[in-house]
Amino acid sequence: MISDRKMWVKKIFSKTKGIFECNQRFFHPAVVGLLFVFLSLIPLACFADSTTSATGISHKTPAPKRYVVKGSKIYDIIKKEPLFFRGMGYSPYLPNETPLQGEPPGDDDRYEEHLGLMKDMGVNYLHVFPLKMPPKFFAALDKTDMLYGQDIWIWAYEEDFLAEAFLEKTLEDIKSVIDHVYQQGRPDRLVFFSIGDELQADSVIRTDSRHPEVRSFQGKHLSVSNRTPTEIALARLIDGAMDYELTRYGQRHLYCHTSWTHIGPIADRPDLEVPRESILNPDLGDLVCLNIYTYANGVRTSPPGSITGTSYQGYLEELTAQTDKPIFITQVGLSTSPFEPKPWVPGFGGHKVEDVPKAFTAIWKDIRTAKGHEKICGVSFFELNDEWWKSGEDPTDSARHEQEDPEEWFGLFSVGPDHRLVPKGKIPETLRNLYRAP
Image 1 (tube, rainbow, N blue to C red):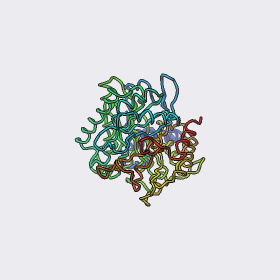
Image 2 (image 1 turned 90 degrees about the vertical axis):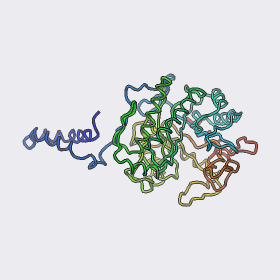
Image 3 (image 1 turned 135 degrees about the horizontal axis):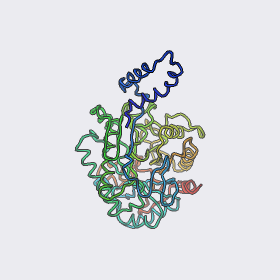
Image 4 (image 1 turned 180 degrees about the vertical axis):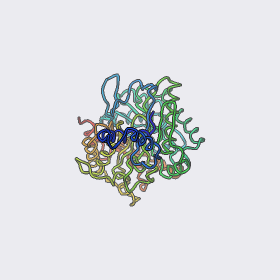
């Protein structure tokens, strides 16, 4: 493997080679050779803006058995067709239930109702947040043709992501989720595992400042170089998870890390929460998974898109231009909380139910018409139903729907007094029209 420094020098040399050859009377071959050696000795940091980080899965690592990456698309190799995921974020906790103590949602008939509603909307993919879904969920899933992805949330507020104790414990937690998929889940319906979701900026900065020398990692399956310390921590977890699945179960699924626009990967934004040297690029696995909200940092300061003129499309176009991997928009949505409690985060809460359909329609158009949209393999709207348990301020939080907490109001459906789901105006109908369109 060519090092990043040598790769950069090779590019410079290839561009200048013709000049040297056309001016042999001025540049003797020996001089060219000496110049090449000189360039190779120059510290890489001098050309930080000209380098590209390297990441890759070993060619010796087996590909998944069914859902694989080919170029910028995800293919079903049995049906021999590319996939576009019309997704829904799914966390089916109902009032008086919470995952904060590690408990899964209830094992009852709610899944028949919920999956029926999503099937009616044209949803073909579920982005599942609970780490260990109960048996009746999988029984209901069997009655549909939906696929799913397993989000594996790790502690995003860690003091140091590269601390060995954190990495060891987190990897054990990840292994238990993989075991659950094979023991009770549906590995044949699973598209990918996402290792970590929305790491917090303060934790990223702390980790990077403590380990400035950690820039590369050579794992059994994943190798990365010229990356940030936090990215190295994620690479170690992804490699460990991949190796565990292959070793214990003889196969693997696709892998990714889910990030958010507040910390990258597009760096030239004035409102990012990390310095440029800590920008996190979630291209460490098979695909790029990113939560992209219309009002989020990094998005609202983007230039206008080429077709719709929105900053949302502008962000998507820059994102698709900087990677050749499939891009999955793993979260996008709007909170219909009665209040917008954070005026310094405009758009986080306070949206009127009657205004959301128009916003969802605009988002869909932004995605489907963006330059480079062929690299976008899917979108998952967040989320099916309101989650009363957020943000977990006290043990009774899941018993009340707090008007001041936008996190509790992202659902397309509210939860009725009988725990059945009630559509919020025309929001579900709007998504049905979008997802069932060609």
